[in-house]
Image (tube, rainbow, N blue to C red; front, side, top):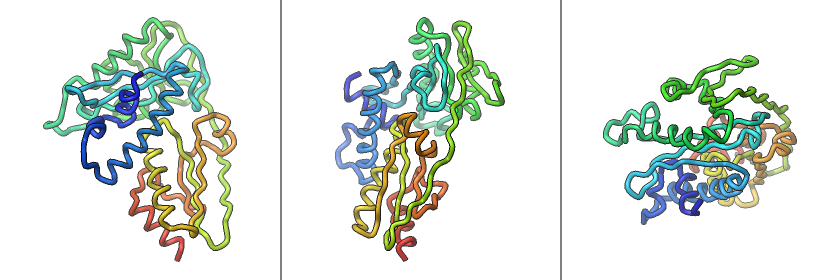
Length: 263
């Protein structure tokens, strides 16, 4: 895929940032985070990941991303593809703002994926969070069926006989290692969702503002081996404590937490 298309997908429907002048600080951070995901997309596409992008004129407004289940760090199986992410912000249920809607955007993306994969695999499964969300009804209208196997819900559009993949679980292994006189920030992140690299670039910037008073430890959980070593929680810990909203922390929020820890 062309590099500009990789970045357009990584921007999660905010493709206008590629050509916009006078970006805000938050928008610049978003572009930097998209660079990290674009590098992950480049690596994963060589292994079989694929995507469909939606455009309004020349601007990307949505995408659907899917890959062989063999590449998943959360499931173990064969013969199936897994939807990693669907971003169609102009189509309900993702957005209820009538002024910005592009009716049929999400449907077109899903149908394009199905057309692409119907002769290449036994079926397409939705990510676990999709099966448990309100979007399950949206997928049902497009031929996906709901199943339950070993106590877990699944959404699948099957093309041939298939076997459910096995869920992969990891023991939580995080242990806080204090450094006397300093605030220790431990961040565990993944490249596959731009919100995680966005939290990472914000942390890097703010921790640098605090100089030697803060120690930042970064662990990327893109590989199964790292999941097994550290556990699967993509979270950020400040002196061993993690705010439940740490995935979406703003720079001001990070500064507040660091100032509290320092005093």
